[in-house]
Length: 382
Image (cartoon, rainbow, N blue to C red; front, side, top):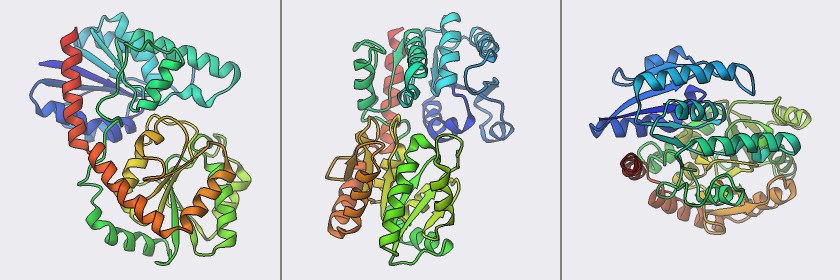
């Protein structure tokens, strides 16, 4: 039996992107599963007893606390003698890649779900790019969750072309067509719109994710402000946790909070219900690993608007399932949103195409089969 350890900075990454695929591997009878992340009382209750959990405190940002985290991980890795250590998220990847190499773990898999330095400039960008290169050098294999980020990484010289691949068509965990059940869309749509007082004949643009500058919310609020001023039947639904200190224009955010046509719902564990209440999904992000919400929106038959960055553009087909705009371009975003508001036929066409695209290329169980095959391949290489 192979011993695998997954390392992330926060438990939420495990819950959202890893737990179901780890369960799939366990059910084959060939894998013993362990997790390392920040201490969290709730997650110990959520994990089945068959999984092992080793809490390691990982502070945010660059701190001297990193040395303690690396020492703790190295100790765990040497004691448990894992065959494969998989890591994702910036801090966890940095610490785990160093500790796993020092502990001589044979397969050190970096799941490159996003490149944090892409959103930085100047000295900060250089520093975080150097850290990214170090993580890649420490790893025996790298797997971005999109072909766009694989090509970008090769072009940036983060690792050579013979070191890295994308599993199947990309994404960290695929989309569950059982959870994102299109047959329940009318029911969900009615429930959510009633909950927030949104008229049935309103046209609802939607966004789902952390409310911070890197997600493009400043451009989104700027475009929405123009749209709702000209059309009272346009609404914007914002689903996610606010991170206002991280690059959000407080004036725009204040306007949005006070606008009756802007609906803030907070975080949800049932994204399929909120997507059902939307007419068009918008992700104006500056950087993404993949942009899971794009294929989730398509699975619920929504046209999408994304920025021209690696990740989200891998999860859609330009001018077939949605529109692509340049990042940080509020005017371009406004025009794209207005185009779909004024084109019900195009919305319907994109929606149908998107549903077929997501179901055919990112279905979750098929992805898990491909992950299983990939992990066996990596372990056989050792």
